[in-house]
Image 1 (spheres, one colour):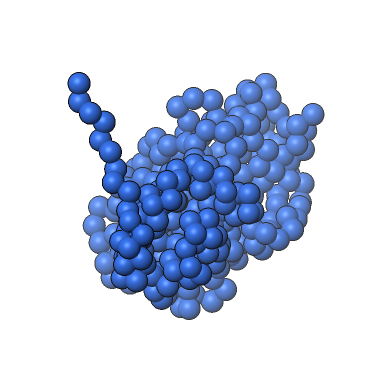
Image 2 (cartoon, one colour; image 1 turned 90 degrees about the vertical axis):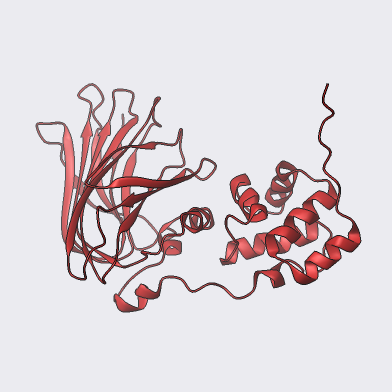
Length: 314
């Protein structure tokens, strides 16, 4: 019988050296080993302090697959220092200066950040870091069409999206599609058209999936491109009462259709709007179902923010 592999516990001297020299992920992993704590226990202690960081994020930090950079993530690192019995700023110092992000935000008036639009931003930031997406803001949205199907059990069946982009610079060759739904099972990218699926990263705790969509060639500045993708469920999707799309940049046209099963029609549907994910949600207008059991909104010259449709059941 083979003996179980034993992990040698890091000595205090070795840990002290790593805290001086880094890198961050080695120091964090060694500190966790030295204290004999599981990630699950650390996750629980962070939650006791009111800090929400997913187990996947903690694992990725100690493996070097992603780095904590945003305000909420850095706060979690400071609590980690306390939980692991480390000096103040021992881990934070190893992170160094923040990497430049979103340089195209300055080129597009009125642009928003992911933090403005995503309620679980730190989790999303981890996923995007893992994908290492270089295309932030380099594709302009000309048109976006979402078609959402709701089933007989009031569940989300599928979300189909068709997008028309225009390259803001030479060489753009990919887009990252994001689906956020904190209720129920995570969907998968079941179908893509006019592109190829690349890296996929998911955070079940946060209800997030990010999928890299690879174009068939690098685009020239000003060139347009059409692609389609679909998020669906292998099992029953979550019961849903709303679908919203967050736009960080202006969009020339947005069309959203929600199609309901004829045996499960809502009593009321509304067009909704939020300027930010943490701002008040506003009902702009009540919508009517058409003869095909669907409601829709269409908007031109769309300003950045959260646009969507919500509905009420009996």
